[in-house]
Length: 277
Ligand code: KIV
Ligand code: NA
Image (tube, rainbow, N blue to C red; front, side, top):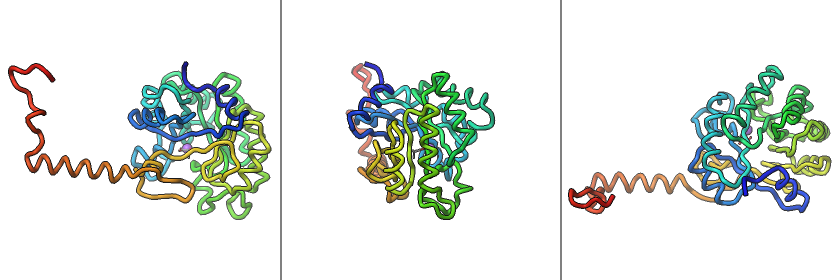
């Protein structure tokens, strides 16, 4: 069968079936996310704060991102694996952008890459066009683009057209440029619901929202938020499990068992005449 392909994604889009995407950064979680039936798994640079212990996404290196993607690739059978290009791994030149993006497909087994585009960001539009021409499928990402957080500062929700928030028109124009450049899908992050609706109407590729409201073609969330492995909760997200509590309970039980002498028990120990392991 193979993994979900771009034609599979576009077929669902044409039928009006909502697309599902979650992040993953390692093999055990990726395996369960895949078994749960999502269409796409994003190895996000949200690994920065959700997997690698950094404060945000900016410090994530190319090698770390390639390594995370390879781990996810080894665990996933059905979902499309999309690798997020880390901060400044693209943009310095067309040449290094293509080489770096290529590593995710050639070394790490990614099916597609994703990169962020500032409102009408010419450099990244050109990179999307070049990658697409060369056979590297690209997912666009507009709206709140966390790699530009130091510039955006306090302005969070995009599409309001005030302060550091882009206008709806600029975001629609950027989405159209990305579609024209060959992006097969576009992620919309933290935009007004009206922006999500207008961008989705303007382009003929599926839009995938995170905090982009109800009138988009699919949804993506950060898996650690969904599973309750984060320290915070967000309005744009939804927590479906409390793994922090599950893990903590399990660890406390193990510690109690060892300290209380109930682990290991007789069934956990080896006997010289019993070769059953
Ligand atoms: O890195 C990430 O998790 C993302 C999603 C929020 C779209 O870019
Ligand atoms: Na990201």
